Image (cartoon, rainbow, N blue to C red):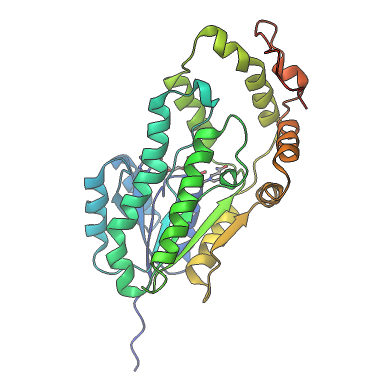
Length: 295
Ligand SMILES: NC(=O)c1ccc[n+]([C@@H]2O[C@H](COP(=O)([O-])OP(=O)(O)OC[C@H]3O[C@@H](n4cnc5c(N)ncnc54)[C@H](OP(=O)(O)O)[C@@H]3O)[C@@H](O)[C@H]2O)c1
């Protein structure tokens, strides 16, 4: 009797998060052996109870990345890089520490995981799926840190894809729109902890605009994670995976905006975020004489 092929193996980072957890559970249900990368030792039990193989991995700790690669062993069919943080806030007010954390986790840590696991992926002709964000294509105001990090991840992914072209490892990028996960609450908490830089006068320039963005966000309902999960599964299993999957209704609409002239796109984005004239005329903030009219 012919031997059955061994089950496929995949490592999912951020397996305790909204997207990573759904991807891990879906792949487990489809028969994969899933290495569920998590940071906190306390999360291991729940992951094991779900039928996953917990491996500890902190993107800011390269030793833990190497230990995770060792735990996986010499063969791996898929790597899904879902772990990330979201930094938000005006470029002028965001402290250097917040920029460093953003890039340390969302770019440098992703590269470390890829470096550590590529030998095992090369053995099987495996796949890498990076989770970016549509904000990389149309970076919205006040989301500069996350958008910049995802633009860097997109560039990294494209370089990597071409570098691995002849090595049998395919690379895809999934760029979702907003999804209903804990990422927004985690981002609010991190902003509150790190605070803003800049004098009170400088901060006043942004106060009303930030209130307007918060009010707009509160009226919006982020989409479900399923479209992104489906895209990850397709990227791992399709004979010819796409290089880029843009998911979610808002994700696809935003991605289209990048084809518009910059000025028009800026006006549409500002309006969609509730940043109309009033948001830029905080009473105490002097408006520079050469300021253009708000949309
Ligand atoms: N949600 C959205 O609206 C949205 C939109 C576009 C793109 N995305 C992208 O989708 C992916 C998944 O996001 P999500 O919405 O599922 O976020 P989430 O629920 O906040 O999950 C983030 C995951 O990343 C892990 N993580 C954070 N810092 C880490 C570190 N230093 N080392 C290892 N793991 C770390 C978290 O672990 P802990 O549980 O230990 O904190 C958690 O498992 C991310 O790449 C995100 O940028 C999300």
